[in-house]
Length: 316
Image 1: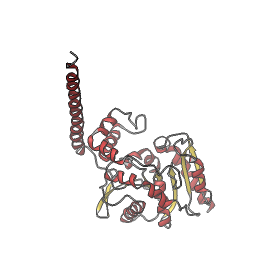
Image 2: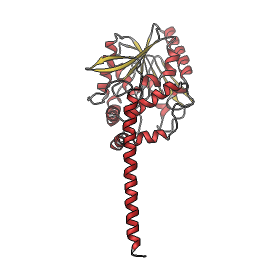
Image 3: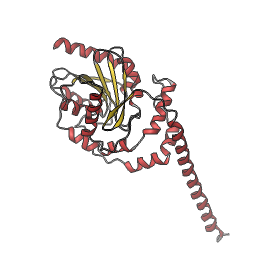
């Protein structure tokens, strides 16, 4: 009986290894089949604009005299859909333009490095193609980095900047090494889909209809940890370093909507207050909410933004 025990353990181990292999294979195949099926279910929105020989997707809504260009945060799978509550609040007053960078939404992917220089150059080319050369720049999260670079390179184009919990070039903790190969493996193996299936819906209880939420879900599977968003993460520290010497032009109106209690970044509020301290028209407004403030405070953001802009025009 004792002699049979090692053989029994060996057989059990072999069965376990086979079961794990079958499970991994099933997860991989289900992901491949689902991804192919979803390709035909993703509904087009916006319009394609030629940029650097590829197609960049842009959504335009509203017919206001002033134009607001919306820039996404890092990793948001479908910016034009994710910004929907904010677009609906802005579009009665402004022409709203949402640019989906390469690797995001319905835009093509690119082989170019996802550096601040390249990303900003591509955004500028998209706007030039649309003949938009005077606008308000509004953005979420990492758009604080690309936005501050944009307004310094093309100062004559931007009439104001509005940040939605935007990144600050000098914020700490951006030199951390990210497990990019692991993230890539998780996506390609299909385990990212599996994890998402059993995770809470990030749009549950928010002002998105079921059709939009389903499109967001499919685009999340399509774009999560793709080659462009991973390369953007690979370049993230250098992108912050490249802009750490930049400040907003003194005459540019700047309003920053931020989390009142960001426990992830030390000195979140002072970092933003410092960004506007030398501005002739600068303001920081805090909300008791999460990082995606435009999901839950779109109405308040627009009300405060319009009031701020009205004040700056009176003072000018």
